Amino acid sequence: MSTDPIPRPATVSTGVSGLDDVLAGGLTPERLYLVQGTPGTGKTTLGLSFLLDGATRGETGLYITLAETEVELHAVAASHGWSLDPIRLVEMVPADELGSENEQSLFHPSELELGETVRDIIAHVERIAPVRVVIDSLSELRLLAQTPVRYRRQILALKNFFASRRCTVLMLDDKSASSSDLQLQSIAHGVVILDQTLSGFGAQRRRLHVVKMRGVRFRGGYHDIEIRQGGLCVYPRLVALEHGEPYDDTPLSTGSAQFDDLLGGGIVPGTATLLSGPAGVGKTTTAVQAMVGTLRAGHRAAYFLFDERLPTLLKRSAAIGMDLRPFVDDGTLVIRSIDPAELSPGEFANEVREAVEDHGARVVVIDSLNAYLQSMPNEQHLALQMHELLGYLGARGVVTMLVLGLHGITGDIRSDVDLSYLADTVMQLRYFEANGEVRQAISVIKTRTARHERTIREFQITDDGLRLGDPLREFQGVLTGVPTFSGETKTLMASRGQTGSGPNAA
Image (tube, one colour):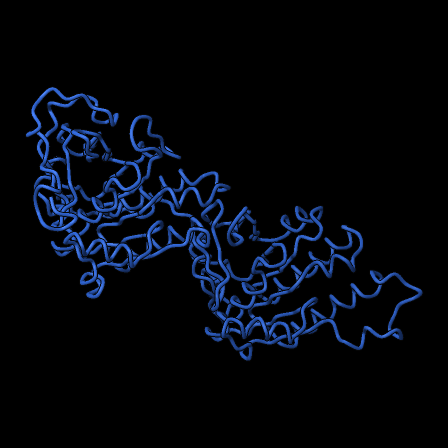
């Protein structure tokens, strides 16, 4: 029969749901953990979240501060809308110790103050009997110890003491002495490192990674984090293989029979379609056409807008017979206008996940990849992250449409990044010149899911949306922008000045 009167959970929440996800549920209870990070990365916020989460579960929490004052801690809590009343705060730097009469002149501080500080910590723990403890920060103990040997011995002594008291402990360290990092990491049961970087433009980027966590299959690599009002937000690195589920792969109609024929029967769930072309050729309109077709069929969608202003998108979509406002108003369409200079890749991936899992979107449009990729030149693995994001969307049966702008108008047209290998379907939209007019052509270069139409068709943007013409069989070199013509002008669609009444009429 067990002698343990108090059953303990298999894991203890950190108070941050995203970090719990990274740690496959949370922390192993009754262990000592090290949280390292430079100033401003969120260590104190994480420590307070950890204790406040315990307070909601009826667990006594103790915050021992060796650096910050209680006033500063209450100010941090107030900035997040928290009250620290449920936890116990112990300030180990009394103001009266700063007087000259308390200065040590005969002994080195490490000979007296370190032992006294450690004994005070032990006394407070014995008196309060906490279940969760945060010590902030170890740099003060390191300064008192003076030598790595004395420092290591004191940390080991504290570890053994907390183990005997069955406490789960977070020790915060500001990485002020890198030579001690490995010693600390070897002692701790788990190690979490927080850091932040500055790019050439935009806000600083914070992230964390788990160095070790004994007995836990945690998710490795870097995970983007953000300090918001309400606490720390951790965006776990997306792993596509973790999110697969069965789905209906019946092709969805774009709402245009001509468009469906060009694609070989519509757009297939679980696939990504890349629409590439120069500026103004109609990439966004084509994506909106396909999305509106699925919305009218009763599906939900999410539109992530990087380049264009939202009012502009709504106005010009309504002008060509694809008014998005009713879908936004009834909740079937979510449009997220994004400033990429303020958004980390991990946060963007989390936004997409929320649209799919919480909103139920079956169609996701990213417009455009250029702004997203170019705004983060220091992010070296964005293409790999995009691969994981598309893999996730494919595993969830979502139709993804990616807009990619190209440099140039005709002739040699280039892109900043080649993502065509990630897409299941690639559509090219091009300008070409004929009869003294600039016209537009569309073609499907590849599709992995159907026998698509291999013709090049002229298209026009009309008051009723996208209108496709007959295949341009009597033209050669349309994709170059400078075609040669060996037929009759009736092969082309009527120019806009010959039919219709509005500026967008066919």
